[in-house]
Length: 154
Image 1 (cartoon, rainbow, N blue to C red):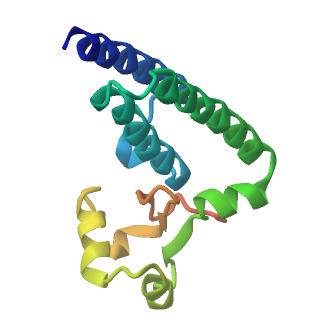
Image 2: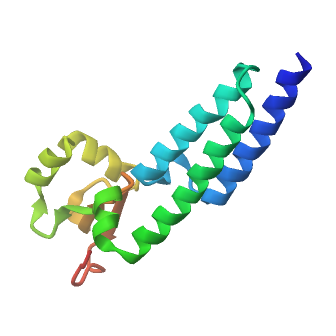
Image 3: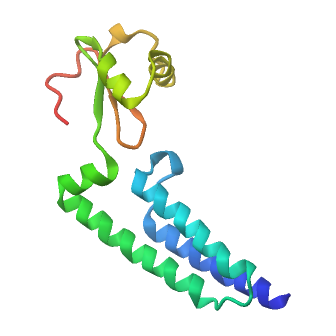
């Protein structure tokens, strides 16, 4: 019993260190590849905790490998727009001065009501008050108020 408690403490501490090294983003701010890594790390950490017959290194080593992998993926993503687009997607303009782009909403599988809900969460109740609304790759909505848009580049 004491062995399991000690193993849990070790894996817990190592998991916290690995997650802290990954950065300070919250779940809602994570890029898709970061969420996948987080889920994998959670699964990897539980295996040696629950089964004392599995060597603890079978849990620690994959956690450290995932941290190294994350480090290199982030560096590669910063150097290559193509890699970033593949791993994280691209921001999409869903509202422009022309109005709501229903084709983009359809491609994103978002209905107008969901878009309006996202706008209301930004205290915007009328699309006439904005020039642009951009759905970012992390799922958050960025809004450019009327008159501040100028020429938008993504």
